[in-house]
Length: 357
Image 1 (spheres, rainbow, N blue to C red):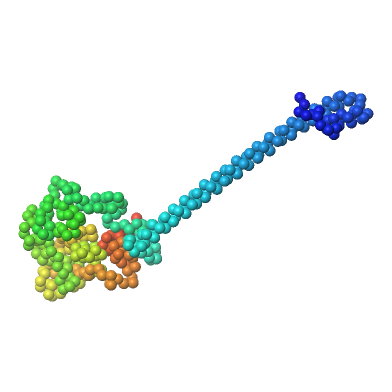
Image 2 (cartoon, rainbow, N blue to C red):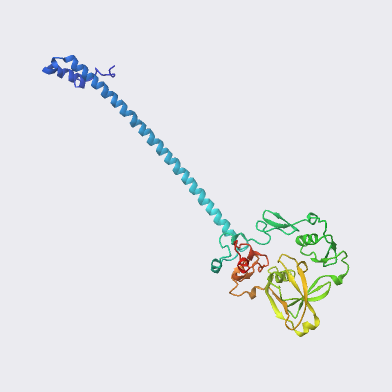
């Protein structure tokens, strides 16, 4: 009932002192044992209160220890996360630096006027170096297939066999069962001949497609119906780029011009034909050639100048993926001005064409 050591100790023990005092107190002397019992009961409950107080203090101490340990663990985790992010940032910075080193492709240059244009997506997309061979953005032609986001050359046997495909002729007179086979060979080996025309026999060299340059800049072609000039109507940079790339100038053309037909040209060529290209063709023979017209004094005919870096002006501030520079106004106009179509790959949903038409 009583705590251990209650009756031991010095004479100044509270209970013993109280009991000794009660012996001399006249009031308490009348009932000494009653007062002593009350005192003992009070001391017992006081002792229990001290024990109850000691347990919460111990619990608080343990809680503080747990809180400190949790804070230390959180600090360690935060430190590890910070170090990981620092290392990741350093690695990202290294990769960014490697992308801009001289040996790597440089992303198209950013121009302040592009943000004002409103049609070109200046955030994120240009750094991806998208071209017509980026199959995450466009479809691959029949002689290529998509491998890890890039249109790669197919093996010739992988060309799809169509039920109604036309036999095709190459420029060297070789016959193939389809144009896809010719382009697949050309894609894998640049020395291979390009497509010339469709025919069941390819031995007639007269029908072979041929491109000529008249008076240094005027473009002429030789087709089955004879020698023709190209009409200035519908002549644009996409077709001009195809012509120059067929002459091993990877950047394409600088100018797709339209000039008046001279009397000398009018005497030699009686007609011109319209040509429409997408820019992905290997030669003008793959483009659509249609609607011949008689040449007269008012006829505009196609002229060209292939790309030369020396011809780049200060207004040509947009850098294409292939290294060619064009004017920012040429972006997102629906025409392959760069020669690799990189000027049309980062257009927003609303293009200039939707505004025009």
